[in-house]
Structure formats: C-alpha cells, structure tokens
Length: 384
Ligand SMILES: *Cc1c(COP(=O)(O)O)cnc(C)c1O
Image (cartoon, rainbow, N blue to C red; front, top):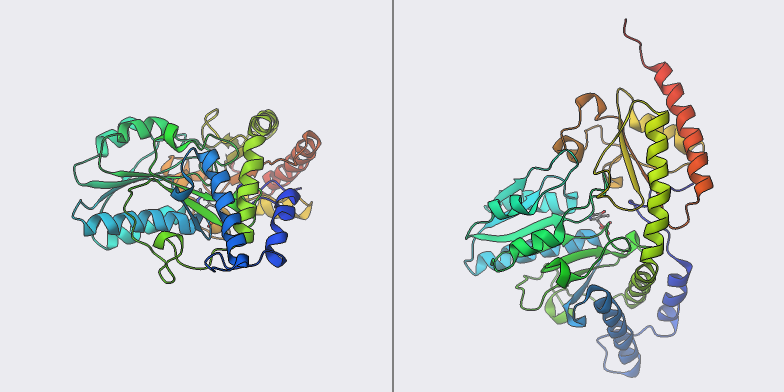
C-alpha cells in the first residue's frame, strides 16, 4: 500500500502510452531541420500549448527542465544573478518551510552576498501576505514562496501574496510542485512571475519539470550550450518526457475536482481516526488549508522512523518528512519552524494518499498503525 504520494507518484498508464511513439517512431532532435526534427518540434510545441492552456499563459513562457529542483534553481539563481547584474538590488525574501531546492539555493546566495529575509511561519506552517508586504524593500528583487508544503501539506495564500507584489519590481516565484492536480495553477490569478512544477509529482515521468517564466522576466541561464529553448535552458529537449508531462498535467487537470473531493473525504477520515486511536498524535500543518491527500502528524515520545520501518514490514510505504532527508537524524526544519514541541520532533509521520487509494486501504492502514503504535508505546520506558 503506497501512502507516499508527496515523494512521488506512479506514472499513469495513459501517460506511458502517450510517450511511447516518441522513443522509436518520432525520435528526432527538435532542433533538426529535417522532417524527423520537425515532427519532434511539433510534438513539443503541442505539449507547450497544452500546458499553457492549464497555466493560463503563452506557450513560449514554459521552460522545460529536469524537474522541480532544477526549476527552483533556475528561478532563484537566474533571477538573482540577472537582477544583481542590472543593479536592481540584492534582497531576497523566502519562508522557513521551503523545500531544500529553494532553501539551499537561498543559503548559497546569502553566502555570495545577497541579503536574505526568511519569513517565520505560524503554528500551521503558513505565511501571510502582510508579512511579505512588510518585508518588501526598494532593493528586493525576488520573493519565493512554497504553494503546498511537501512535509505538512499546508497551503500558502499565494494569490493574496501575488496581489501584494503587484507593482513592486521584485519577481514572485512559487514552488508549486505539490500543488499540481490539486490546486489552481492559473498564473494570472495567482499573480506569479515564475512557477515550478515537476511531472513525477502528478503521475508523470521522472526527470522532467518546467518553469513558467512570465514574458520580460530577466533570467540568467544556468545550463548553457546549444542555446535551446531561447537560450533559457540548453540541451536537447527530451521529447518523450515533455509529451508525457503535458499528458499527465492534462489528465490531473481534467480530473481535478473529482480527485480533490474524493481525496479530501478519505484524508479527513484518516486524520480523524488517527487522532482518535493514537492519543500521542498531533496533526501537523493546517487543519483545512492543506493539500487534498495529505495527512501528517507528530507523535509525542515515539520514534517515527521506527514506526515507518514496522509499517514497511506489513507492506505500507510512508515516510516522515521529505523523502530527500529520510535517514537523517536531524529534526525537520519545517516542524522546527512551526514550533512543534521538542518531544514530538522525532515522531514525524506523513501519510499521503493518491488517486488509487481506496477507503478499504485507509481502514487497513489504520488497523496496522494502531497495532504498531501500541507495540512501540510499550517499548518506551515508563516514568514513575
Ligand atoms: C519534490 C519537490 C521538489 C523537487 O522536485 P524534483 O522533481 O524531485 O527535483 C521541489 N519542491 C517541492 C515542494 C517538492 O515536493
């Protein structure tokens, strides 16, 4: 049973089917002038149009990357270096609960002399538009805010922040990797200048992502060479992956309303049951402003990793914080930023359901989780 859809998702068979012709039949290099090349370029153009329709932007505002990490790197480094070179300033604003693909880049930029403001979050992991407004200065060049948090599922008020940014020179980047298929990606309504997506988080293939870049946004390319994609990102475009990403986005967008409704219902049941049967458990993240399939907890006095190992033994795949940091003994920066009690920090658990999860799965999961927690509780030394 797979309850780790924030780490990655299985590729939808309809996506695999859409990709197949582009491995063998239409295999050309999209930059080639012959018919094979033209066919590849056409497929890519069509993918861009599909994606642009869902993001409510122009096809030429989509830059293909290798995934969410590269998109975040391109957005942050690309903007920071381009605007600094133009003398616009060196102040960057972000939040304490970003994915490491943003936080680590911001840290690097701080080491290089940029001024960085890391906004604190409330107990649910949220920032407000007012916080952003108060932090904006004349020399602010970039604001980067996560849309849906991968560890605790909290959704930030992106459209409100977009409104506050309106008229300011600073560019607004949003890491929307967890939001695809669950929340609106309309870049006009959100008021964003750049937005990162990664296909494998929405039932597409791994190794492909995109950065929406609003027209007239200065961006210093981070991968240079053949000058593909209007010099914004060099390298031969992976046409099968691009076709797959567009198909995946189209499918999750078509089915969004239905998916969100069914996930929310199952998730709310899961949360309620866990909070009732596991008294040590506290919900992490916002109770309502959270990603549809996302349930996360911090258990007092229990070891999350040990519980996850036992869940794995009975065939249930879940994780603690982000997949990228599993195995580290350090507490999650997200939980620390939210001010979670120290005696809950090692009890982090995340159960993220997806399109194929059933109500029976949730029941079976709850049965196993309760049994495992009961065992672990008895292993904790009792105080007198
Ligand atoms: C997964 C994830 C990323 C990184 O995406 P990759 O495609 O795995 O590089 C970035 N941000 C968030 C919020 C994510 O969940």
